[in-house]
Image 1 (cartoon, rainbow, N blue to C red):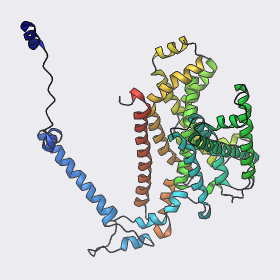
Image 2 (cartoon, one colour; image 1 turned 90 degrees about the horizontal axis):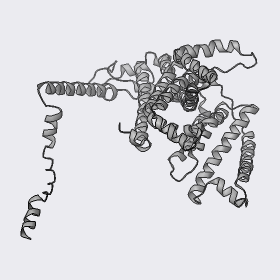
Image 3 (cartoon, rainbow, N blue to C red; image 1 turned 180 degrees about the vertical axis):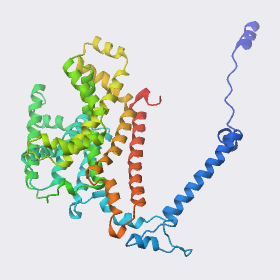
Image 4 (cartoon, rainbow, N blue to C red; image 1 turned 180 degrees about the horizontal axis):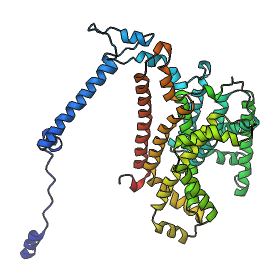
Length: 456
């Protein structure tokens, strides 16, 4: 008995000790990361000096010596600093940026009608809000409804005037879908059920065949659509031509439509390029290679100057419409190759396993392959969106007053003649904020929905 106890005591593994507390401290961290040797110390000191010099220069130019109130650029330059010296070019003239701020955002859109731009932005935000509400169902349908119909509703609101029958019907459809989306949000939170299920129950069709439910839902939506059509028919909005659109509003309008259309069109082109049907494969390949091989500015010039020559005179397409179509085509070609790369990254075993379950091509693509591919493509997709947002500044070359051309125009005002650096800095700051927000949101998506791919 004693031998057994002694043997257990000898061969029993010793409990592992907890790791010692971190005693490195701040000094050890600095020595390891910044002052690990002579070379590291030199680079650290030089880097600190450069960063400090940059921060001091920016503070002196943008804050300490800046002029915030003035009636002209000459007045900015002649402003006397507390030390008795004139500002000259040693300080920023933010007064000119403040005077032109409205034009930077809205362009030449009439001041009394700018509430329509704000209304469209509010509708878009509310339309996409259900994506972040966990208890709301039908998120994919909500996104598709916004992408496919919101531009028509926004066009009706922003253009005003007498809307044609096509625009009236499509914008009423968009308004009806927007109302339906928020009815679904309300019923999801108030009754814990979708609006479609509630309509079926209220009509007493819950016990009937499921194939009859769609007719009830269509009838309910038809009532909402007719109400939206009657409401829009009473609108009396002042006509605002697209030639008055401009500033950040125009930049976001062009890039937003292009970004929204890029993913669905890119998916279709990528699937077409991988199709086994020769006609579809050749057409999609030619489309992608043609528009990827031509600069965007060339496509814009062709759309604005050449395309109207091949269209009937009665059409007389609007310049902004042609520009949006051109940018959408350009974005679809680049997005198609990103999607194709994501599809090729999916292992072949995923296709074979889905086919072994008896799924057809469309179910395999929709439920198995495409969700995994989109997770892999998040960084590339967002990077393409950021590049597309910045590329839309090329529309200033063909005469559309986006935020960049508005920034240049402010320096040509007789009162602000010579004001160039400050508007460009303001435009650069706006682009940085938007692009940085898109980048951070893409990282959030990678952490939340990308599964095991987000931390690679």
